[in-house]
Image (cartoon, rainbow, N blue to C red; front, side):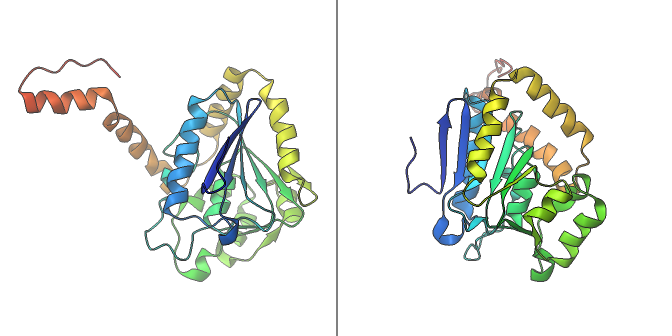
Length: 250
């Protein structure tokens, strides 16, 4: 079950998780609340019996307009983009309609497949706006270099059809059919061997070039795993209690 007032909803459908950015009144713009909810969704997917995840946005007007202009806190896409600080070995499919802007394009970039509605428009306008987080830096490793540079340096939109032609999109479908098609693909994947799919995804990740921001996130991921561990809590407690710690490796 999901709640309509949640900024990110999570629904399990026969082994497929539908993760939806749920702010249609704000074109599914990403604020701090959405960031935290997306991070929680990836952790929930990892811990669940769901075998495939689909990331989409509520409505057909926008997958996401990217960073919410009313947000004052600086974004850190490393912490809520799947596969960066939070590893996700399960297949991820983006289902995109309407605008996919800025950091939202980064989210799609990090998914394994993308289904786009005919009205989908991909744009990375940060060079026009005077700021960028840098996660987009691995885009040239996923589509032809000069097309990636056009997206990043011109900041002009490309259509769903153009995105399909350059390999950023797997399917282009009529508006309103993007989630249906993504579910069709996910359902077929869900019948495959999970261990093999996870292994192949990890192997592919090793082949794909990573930008500097993505590479630097490795240290964050590893140290935060330690800080969240029972051994860390035990170490701190043993110092306070002036005793020898008893570590369990958990």
